[in-house]
Length: 187
Image (cartoon, rainbow, N blue to C red):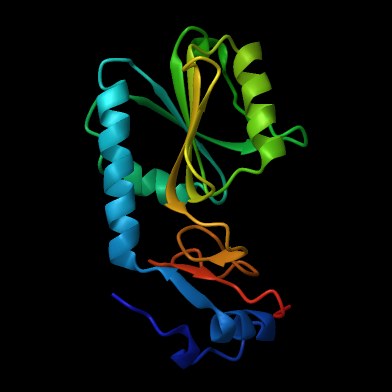
């Protein structure tokens, strides 16, 4: 399904910056490509974790779309949590005691290098068995730490910033089924 964001008519209450963002967005991945990429992630996660009793942590706000898409595709037992991150980029969880010795899958829209490093530090503090970071968009997939850590990416792109697939502008657009690149000239 292709959406031409330049053709949308907006309610008067929609901020002008949002209207401009939609008008100048460029499609990177359509809904079918997004679904296929998430299907592939789900297969990989199922193979790696179906017998591992993982904890699935969705980082809010931008991880909720990918988290929801994956939850519908992963049919093995797993424990799920949602979390915001603190100023140090560590997940804020009410009870993290049950993470020790277990594999953890952290779902996010995107993670910067600093955020990924902070998650590695947090995982070490929590004595997590294996940490997988799963993101909607970003650079190539990577493995590090002798197989104890991985970053899995649904949509490989260096083009930023984004709207759609959990990414938003001014609180709008996270629901778009495709991933669009925003013009850096739009404010």
